[in-house]
Image (cartoon, rainbow, N blue to C red; front, side, top):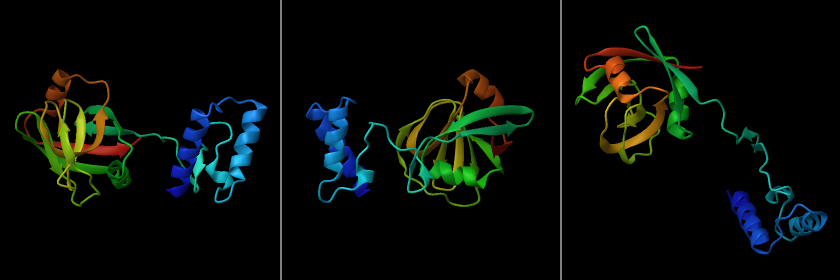
Length: 177
């Protein structure tokens, strides 16, 4: 974390000093800065582009698309880039028995708790959220409550989602693509 902060601070200083050009002088200044006491070569990004890996982990967004099967309907969704969505993806494939609630959502127990970071959230049709750390909720309407965002169903209108999700009980299978 300290390296990221130092790298960010260094880049900010270089930009404010007008050293953001990619010429030889700028490269030399950046190398001299990297040689400064307390600085490591990792803390300076010489070409202004973040490295693809950090401590062996990819920092680029990996494929976050999942499949959702409800009866004979196959949907796709894009997951958020957070710890809760990562834990949800690790559970897959998972089938959840869901029940209509409030005329705007389907809710079902995951059977275990996931990490959560709940915040007051206004949802819209297609949103997939974690509720109470152990329930997944899919919206075909809107609500405001304390949730952790997991993802969003791709390419379906509120009207289409209301038809697919309905108001009764459904079985939903979530799987990684």
